[in-house]
Length: 165
Image (cartoon, rainbow, N blue to C red; front, side, top):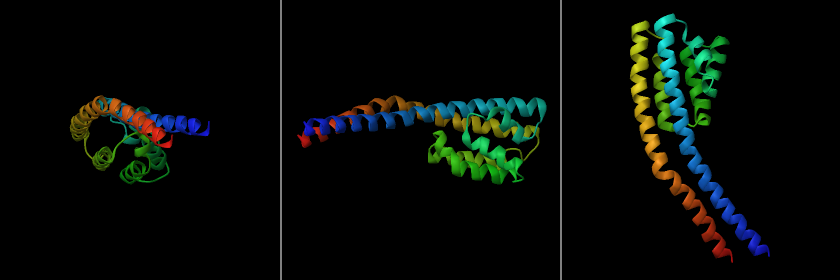
């Protein structure tokens, strides 16, 4: 009876692992889609109202923990670039971004808000293209690997259970 319970737990653990890995792929896609929406909204905001970048974050960056933290730190007196870097380093991984995505976010924050309106629009368009390519790659990864992770988890759990019995 204990072996059967142990076997079921191993199967469930393997399945859960596979589900979690599969979910990470979907979360990354959702985060990149949301960041692209932010870039689009920021471009419109910069073009028509020329508000400070912290205001843009407060209005359109609420989906991301790191953007909320950046706005909070900026309101506390920290410079935008330093607040952005600190927030990305500490919180972007929790929003589903990979190390490569976080490097791009750091690069984005270095020049966001540092030039005139035309420069900002160009900056936002450049990063829209870069993050668009990352989104395409993330979707391909999700479509290719999502089921693989689920099946791998199930089979790992089943294999462990068979070895136990």
